[in-house]
Image 1: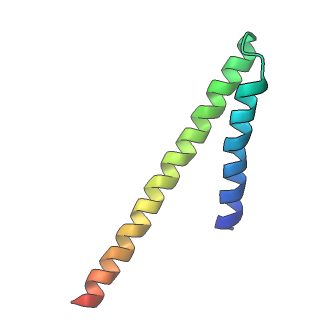
Image 2: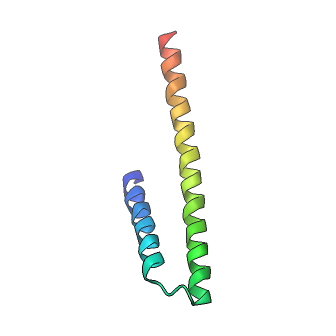
Length: 68
């Protein structure tokens, strides 16, 4: 499940860069869409980073407890 989400999420970033290149940036709705899209991707990225940090903390704590 996590691997599938990672692949889809990477595809969304790729899609963002393609849209950024090919969409007409003179259109106001396209600008609003791209800004919204990047905000959503950014929030998802931040939450994934925080979750990963917490997982690594648990692993380090387990390792420290194991060594003691």
